[in-house]
Structure formats: C-alpha cells, structure tokens
Image 1: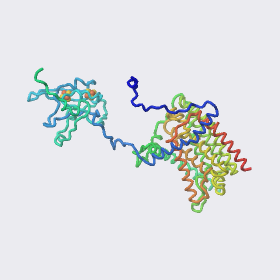
Image 2: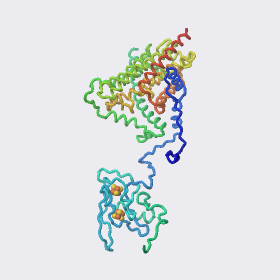
Image 3: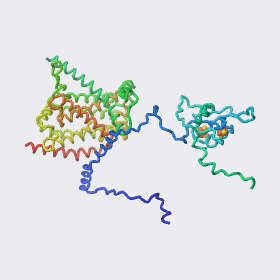
Image 4: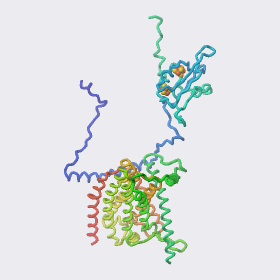
Length: 202
Length: 330
Ligand code: SF4
Ligand code: SF4
C-alpha cells in the first residue's frame, strides 16, 4: 500500500542543506565575511568570460537562416495527389468544410463527365484559420494536410489560398517528391498489421 | 601668447568633445556586442558590416525623433535636465590628462585642457553635479517610475560620494597634491599607488573602483534606471535627443572614470613615452571592458543594500585605511 500511495517518480529526493538565518549580530557579521571572501562574484565573471572565449553562438539569423521545422508542424495547408495515378485525392466529400471550427473553408463541387464528384471551387481563408488541424484529421482521403510553410504574412487580414495553390504540382509528382504529412489524421506506422478482414457473416 | 593659448584650448576642447561623443556612440556598440557574446548571441549584425553602422542608425533615429514634452511635467526643468548630465560629464573631462604631452610641428601639446591644482576634486565634484540630471529629470517628469528613480538617485548619491571622497584621501596624502599630473609624476618615482604603503593604496583602489560603479550607475549598482524594476527610471518620459543626451552623458562618464582610475592608482601614462601612452589606453580599455563584463555577470543590489554597503562597510574601511596611511607616513 505504501508503494502505491507514493506518487514520486523517483525516490532520489533529498532536502537541501540550507543553514538557518543568523539571528545574532556576530552571526550576521560572520555570514557577510564568509560571503564576501567566497569569491562567487569572480565565478560569475569567469563563466561569462568562458562563454565569450568559446564563442559558441546560438543565434539563428532568421531571414537568412531557418530552423528545420518538425514534420508534424501545422502550417499552411497542402492538397495531396495519389501516388499511383497522380490524380487529386480529394473526393469533394465536404467533411473538412463541415468540421472547420472557424468556418474558413469554402468549397463547391460538380459532377464531372465520368459522373464523379469533383471539386470546382476550394478556398481557405488563412486570416480566419487557427491551424487546429481538424480538417486534416477528418479528411478520409488524406487529401488536405498541413505543410511546413509558415511565412504567410500578408497586407490584409483576409488572405486566401486556393485549390490550385495547395495542390502538389505535377512536376513534384513525377520526381516523386511529394511528402506525406505525419501529423493530425496521418496513418499511424504499422497500420497494415492491425487491419482485420471484415467477416462475411456474423 | 594669449591668443595662441586661447586657440590651443579651443582646439583641445573641440577635439575632446568630438572624440568622446563619438566614443560614447561606439561604446554602445561595444556594449551590445560584448554583452551579446557573453550571452552566446551575435548582437547587432544587419546595419553595415558586423552591425558597425548601428551607431549611425541609432544617431539618426535619436536626432529625427519627435521631441515630446508630456503634459503635467515641469517644462523648464524637464528640458534642462538631460543637458546637465551631458554637459557636466564633458566638463569633468577638462582636468583629465588624456595622454602624455607630445610635439607636433615643434609645438608642445599638453593633452589636458586645464591643469588646475584641485584637479581630482574638480572632476569628482563635477561628476557629482551630473547626478542632478537624473534627479531633476525624474522629479519633473510627473511619472511614478521617474520619481522613484529620482529618489533612488538621491540615495545612491549620498552613499557613494562618501566612499569616493574618503578613499582617495589616502592617495592624496601620499602625493600631496590634487592635480592628476602630479599624481602621474609621483607614480613615476614611487611606483604605482596600488602597490604603495603596504596595501593601503590597494584598499583605496578597490574602494574607489566600487564607488565608480555607483558613480556611473553601472550594473551592480544600476539602480536609477533599472529596466526590470522601474522601466527606464528618469528616462521613461524622455524621447529623441533629450534621452540621447542622458545616454551620451552616461557613456562619456564611463570613459572618463575609466581614465581617472588608472591615472590615480595605476601609474597613469608613466614617463610620457609612447609606450606609456599606449599602456594608459590599454588600462582605460580594460576598465571600460570591466563595466560591460560585470553587466553580463552580476546581479543588481537593492537601494537599501547599496546604502548598507557604502555606509556600514566601505566607509569604515575607508576611514581605517586613512588612519593607517597617516600612522605609516608619520
Ligand atoms: S486547420 Fe482548423 S481552422 Fe484551419 S481550415 Fe482546418 S479545420 Fe479550419
Ligand atoms: S479535402 Fe478531404 S475532407 Fe475535404 S472535401 Fe476533400 S476529401 Fe473531403
């Protein structure tokens, strides 16, 4: 029971050995003298001097250099294509438009010549988008995802990105450079192993 | 003769003013760079090569900014306060020998504007007057933080002046003169004052150095304009070139006190050779660098701690030091 109630992650805690404050004048005097001659000020001086000599500068000169960004980072959206046919993944189901909590996706669909549903209009208002990732999570086709492009400043509050702008260009597909998104809505690794066949009958 | 002297003095004044105004600007560059390196940053990098033109950019900004006089301030005092700081800083420079005397075109130049016989007293007195800038500016500003800063200024002022005055008494007793030139000549014959008189000189040197930090308001005693407590203190309501004048005054003060410390205690410019002059500049550079170094390394003390330090610790040490010096010299 003792072990269950102990919520400390490790039991290596110990109390710091802090001496009591001196109460007598002589005690205070002794503390002042001890602190004065302990040379802590020079330790501080040495530390900053050491860092200056080492010159181990950590500044990232931002517009010229950029930090690598994590693959799960949620920045401006991208529309992916199918690897095999290079066709657009989006099936125009409208789930992303429905789920978007800031109502910033507007889309329209039509029936194309093969009687398939096709996206005719698709815009995201980046001025409203809060980059929550719900659209990427809800998309059944892994079509809408987030990309790594975070430099989307604009002169206006309203700042739109359209379907053509988000879609992976065809040249990138031929070079095989399309990157899958690893964040919200992505397939977890080893997903295949967990797939079960639907039984024919119960 | 009279005319020649007048022209020479005017030229010297102009040279000192220009050089130290420029140095005050470049001092800010060094301060930013050195602080940045000590904190593993790069400091200014974008304006000019390695950010060297940052000083010019700052100057343009300060000069062209609107000069705002807020409502409710005591206008005249508010306007005059920065001028006090800057002008007294430069007035103090009149009695400082910056270099040994040298010849150009057969004409001997003494790089001191006026070798008055009360040199060091004059310098300390004028630098003390400089504190009226923050004091008056802070009180005239109609701003709580400025007022706090003015009150702190007064507290700092009465604390460090005692230590400065008492700590240089012992060296003055050794030299028997108040002129910085006499200090220098004394140290040519008797060695540096820091090492003189069985450690008395050393104690005086340390005390004066500590008081110099309070005098210039640098980091361990950076109380009057402590950004993280009282915004910019007395400078909060100032903008444009009036604020710039405070700034120039502060940096010029740092340079002048960096000249005074080696002149008083560390042998000054020595025997007047080129080597001695370079040594003096090296010492000045070290003391200036030390001001920046402590800013990166040390925390600030509270105003009451500064007063405690000055009155209860440094002043008794200074008095005992003087007594010891007197006993030894008798
Ligand atoms: S990230 Fe969120 S707010 Fe932005 S479009 Fe997707 S669902 Fe809407
Ligand atoms: S992007 Fe995805 S969720 Fe949105 S309409 Fe297309 S397929 Fe549906």
